[in-house]
Length: 97
Image (cartoon, rainbow, N blue to C red; front, side, top):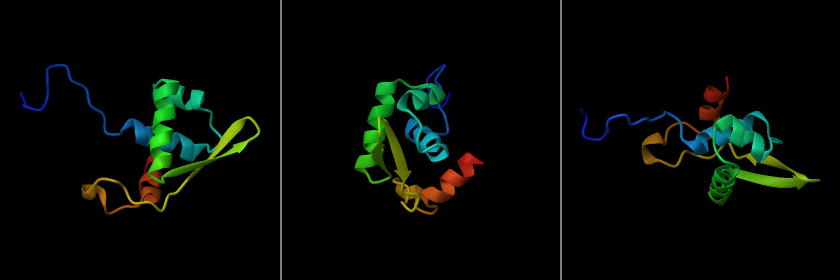
């Protein structure tokens, strides 16, 4: 067995941050509750992820009445140095298809 894996371990290709960003890209007016349901996360986890994405400039929001309307800065580069080639826009386009 690979030394980096434990018996029964599970892994996924996309992080929770990526999943949340995909949902917001699909529907900029989406509610946190709906993101949580679609991503199989808690609302609190989604709120933390949104705060992370806003802090690092990937996402902004504007209050519209009682709802938030999000804007993704798709021109941003991905954070990890090994992922420095494509822009966020290119990655999201591939994931949203």
